[in-house]
Length: 464
Image (cartoon, rainbow, N blue to C red):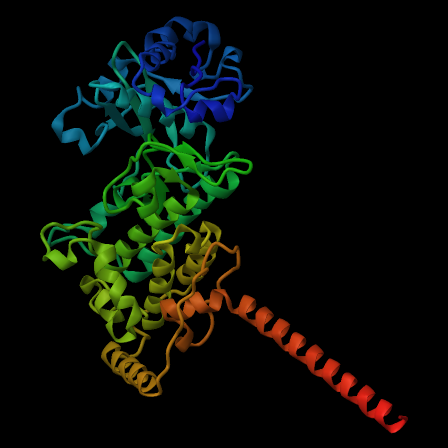
C-alpha cells in the first residue's frame, strides 16, 4: 500500500508537529522525492488482488494516525476515461492544468479529471496539498475527491463531476440564449459557499484558510448547489496565540485581501474579503477585474465602495440582467453584508459564521416577482425616503470595529436599518448601549456623592 509523504510545508507541520520546515523549502527537490513516494496506479494494480479494495490509506510511517481514503488510478485508465484527453472533453483550464470530463470504465461513473501541468514544482505542491486537504475534509459544500494518479511524471486528480459548471460560467460572458441567475438562486449559492468556508474556518482543526476563493472555484451541482473546489493553495491557519500565518502571496488579483497582498500575513479574514468580492459579483453581475470597462469601473470593489454611502445609488449596484426582479430590501441587506466583508481593515470584517447567519436568512426569504409591487414605484419611494433623511440632516456614523465580534446579525428589522453603514452601527449597538449605561451610572454616582456631601455640610452648619 502507498502512503502520503510528510510534507515539507506548514500543512505537514499541522499533522506531524515533529517535522519542522517553512515555505522557503518550496523550491527544493524534496517535493519531487515526496511525490515519488505516492502510490502509483501501477503499484495499485500489483496490490489489488491482495488488498481486495481500491482504497488507499496513510501509512504509519507518515507520523500520523489519520486515515486517508482515496482511489489510485493508472494513467491508462484516465486516458481511456477522457478519450485520450480529447479537446471535446475539455471542461476548463486553470493556472495549474486542464480539467476534462470523463467516464470511468470500471464503474461507469462520470467524473472530472484534472491534469496538472508537468512543468515546475508548483504543480507538484498543489497536487500534494489538494490530495491531502480533500481527503481529510468532507462537507456538503466542498467538492469530493474520488482519487488520483501519480504514474511517472503524470499528476492527475479525479473529482465528482459537477454538471452545472462553475459560478463564473453563469455570471459572466453569458451567451444570448443562456438565462441569467435569478435573485433567489444567487442568494442560495452565496449562502452555500459561505457554509463551505465556515466549515474550513470553524469546524476544521486546525482551521484551513482557502486562499483562492473566487467565482471560478465555486462549482455547481444539480439545483445550483455550490461546492468549493481547487484546494491547491489552501494553508493551515494560525493556532494557539498566533494571529496569522506568513506565506508567499498567492491567489487571484482582484480577490486578494489588501493586507495579505501587501504583507503576506494570512488570516481567515483574508478569505472573508475574497468572499465579499464574489458576493459583489453575484449582486452586480460584474467581474472582480474587468479591463474592458472604463478606467474607474475596472476594479469591482473600487467602483462599488463609493456607492455604499448613498441609498439612492443602490439600484445601480444590482445586475441589470435581473431586470428589476429582486427585493429592494433584500438588495440593501445583501449590500450590507458585502460592504462589511470588503472592509479595508481585517479586524472590522465579520466572522464567516456571522456571514452564514445573515445569508441563510436572505436565502430563506424567497422572492416572488409576480406578487411583488411595481419595482419602479418602490424605487421612487426609496428615493423620496432617502431625500427626506438627507433634508433632516440624518447621518449614519461609521463603525470602527464593526465585524468579527461573533454577534449574530438581525436582518428582520425595518427598511431604514438596511443600509451598509447602518448595519455596521447595529453590529455595535449593544456595545454603545453598555457604554451609555456605564456613563449614566457614573454620572448618577457622582451626583449622589455631591448631594451627600452637600447634606453633610448643611448638617454640620446647623450644629455649629
